[in-house]
Length: 201
Image (cartoon, rainbow, N blue to C red; front, side):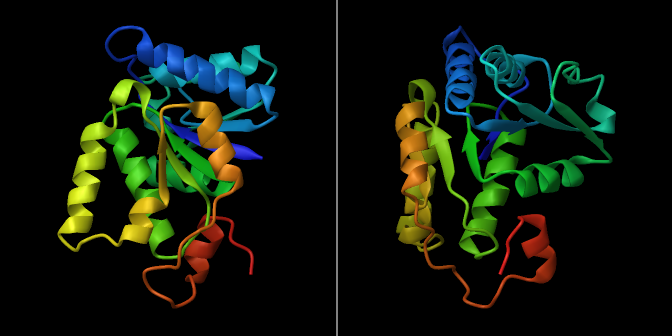
């Protein structure tokens, strides 16, 4: 089992986000779940990776060549894949994981989250996606998502497929019971998308 964690290369304000990232890394290691993440040694990204490795877990990083120095690629991972660009980074992370969790982060974290969530709506993968709502960080986003439903731009079943929880243990337990909703469109996934997300017919 591998879980891809999207999160910030910054630490955020105060200690609450780093502490949450550390809990996530430790719990993944305790449960024997491999971590796939963006490959950096700084910010929340570094905290979750360090905690997983300290707990004996296996960590796989994926980082674009142009960010190796800027984000400070982690030197101690089991695997570090240096790829050509952000598109290749996201594709490899998605294909390597069985589920996704977004911790607090900035625009890049939201970009990664919304891409895998959009592709789930289109039926291009059936992997669970969760938000770890640390200290209410994702409450404004939840309000916006509910507004999208109310205004007819997002179907309720796809809103409900985005699992939100402040407790990482409970979120992982919910992953175990996850049932993917019916896709927005019912045509089969294109072969390229199926390959991207590791879908097998």
